[in-house]
Amino acid sequence: MEQMDGSADTPELEQLYRDFAANDMAPLWTQRDDLMPMTPAPQAIPFVWRWKTLFDIAERSGRLVPVGRGGERRAVGLTNPGLPGTGYATPTLWCAIQYLGGHETAPEHRHAQNAFRFVVEGEGVWTVVNGDPVRMSRGDLLLTPGWNFHGHHNDTANPMAWIDGLDIPFSSQMDVGFFEFGSERVTDEASPEFSRAERLWAHPGLRPMSVLEDKISSPLSAYRWEHTDAALTEQLKLEDEGFPATLSQGHAAIRYVNPTTGGDVMSTIRCEFHRLRAGASTPPTHEVGSAVWQVFEGSGTVVLGDTETRLETGDLFVVPSWVPWSLHADTQFDLFRFTDGPIMDRLNFARTYTPAQHENERAR
Image 1 (tube, rainbow, N blue to C red):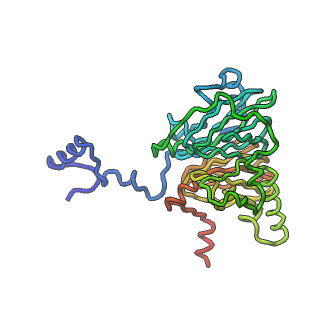
Image 2 (image 1 turned 30 degrees about the vertical axis):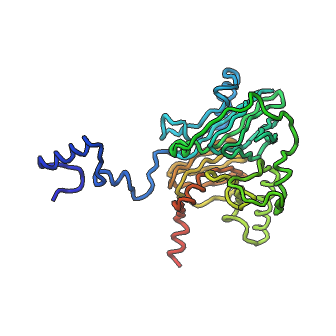
Image 3 (image 1 turned 45 degrees about the vertical axis):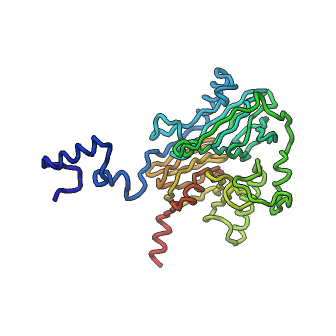
């Protein structure tokens, strides 16, 4: 009996392997390690992008590349070195820095892919979602669920940059993409303080009875920084008072949710915000699925696998599936995170492993 390693030392076995190749077949026993590894073995690698470098490149793109119909957006994707030729941050997530110059307009379009924007600095741009102008300000999370028309207009003379997050890689792999051009400009160039969606939905614990049916994606187009900041502040205050309110000592966190279901804001993307007190650390953690983080404010370090990297405001980093990560805060450390968690949950692949917690449970 031959070993199941693909070796062939008889004429009959050599012919069998030639027939596999000639008929576009691949025996499992020669590729089991690749198809079914003992733990996830991602092609994507942990990687850090510096905000100062990204912004400089985006600014130069703003001077050299006009925004308009065709290319649609002056958005520069962050390409994971482990996924060359794709323009993808992870196998499921796309992340880009988008730059809009003074008084520029990015025309309207819509696509099947889900999208959001997160603002780490600046103001003056409104994103118009299905005709509803939504102010974009520092610390805000702005949603554009799939198949919603959207464009952007800058109401000021000053440029602005932000990050875009989409499920483009997942959508591409699943062959579900559709795209449609919209208005050459935006359908409403007003610049209100609050969008109509916020006026209807942004009231904590209250739901309009005119819209009682659940929505697949959140109908709230903007999650404002003042609410995020207040929620994180109160978690840490409650911790100080001796009440359970944080993920771990000195680590407050919130998840942005769909107010109609209490679930994730979109069907393929999970968004969170984390705050660590100065001096706080998180334990090394493995998670199935991938994540992209951006430092909103403060400084600290991240350990990705065996590599420790210092981080400052605006820096982005990617955590591929099952790569252990941990954070340490030098100052108060605020970070935005988005993941493919809803996909992993829905398909029942989600798994988290924290070695320290596992050892504590074994010791009991």
